[in-house]
Picture 1: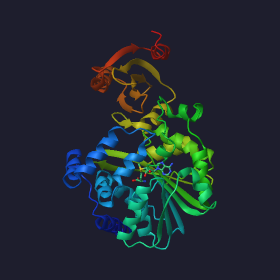
Picture 2: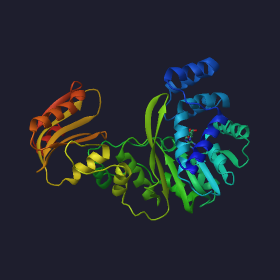
Picture 3: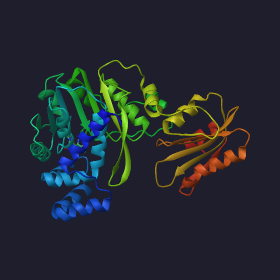
Picture 4: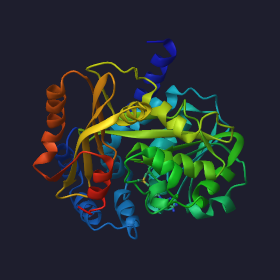
Length: 402
Ligand SMILES: C[S@@+](CC[C@H](N)C(=O)[O-])C[C@H]1O[C@@H](n2cnc3c(N)ncnc32)[C@H](O)[C@@H]1O
């Protein structure tokens, strides 16, 4: 490991040690920890969470941030996320910014991290929750940070409070979905189709508020649960409409666990410079940059890599397909065998983003069929299955005309 990497890791570890913020490893452990030390508050918090809607989210934050100790105890379920996020943030090695704004700072765990690693910068955290702001102020005091300030403010007032082009970094982590009330998750068979043909169901206004706050050479760091590549593409489209371009080479994913459950989130960086990538090329690059996409017998691809490789093969014919409608969900899936001169392509795709491509030798149809059966197996019992042998039939099944 390089010296810089080692130093960065140490800095992040030291910060989390100072907070005593260790991740909880299971749902039971997390609940147990809260109940042991904060019995009443943890009950109130649980009740508030059960009846939460987009309209009354404030109550959950008010209870969670009743005091800093309880707020940090609740943060244990996300401690691994915070740590992996901070590891990524420090790894991108940006020169010291002058001003940083953290929108939706809550109890300040991340805002204080920015102030900790950039002691020369002026860091401001804003949140609409007064309780969150109080906790954040206490946390900054506990950590002895003097380059940080917190203000209660609604997102919609930010352009009135701060001058235009004031911040080198504007950051929002898991906040915009609340500000915007939700971020749509596209249902899709092809992300190219989503990006080329579907209207954007999000308002550019939100990104424009952010764009105005950033200096000419500044950057916007956004982290949201964007569930599939089409959602990431739509986010890039939203940014572009507000004159912010994705920096595809810095944008990445972080892997973490939430109470022991594995999870993954994109960490997106945008700026005001010209981008050399179209959004479609950017997505391809983001999702396949570490992979070898060469066609070879007995190789397999997943996610965007599977979709890209499959689409790039121009000369192919469908042999057989199965359309699965899952009983208890809106999920629909297709499992198909396609034939090229050299290969059988076994392609599984779902309208929620699932993609799987297996490359098999063209001389053994039985083996290809077995592979197809294997892919279908785990979904078959919970689905209605319909068979087709060409795209026209598939379209009719999909439109429910057969
Ligand atoms: C899920 S929390 C994320 C907090 C923190 N960034 C983190 O990752 O732990 C979302 C935060 O956004 C704040 N928030 C929601 N809507 C807001 C708005 N319109 N203006 C300012 N803050 C808002 C909430 O109060 C809450 O603290």
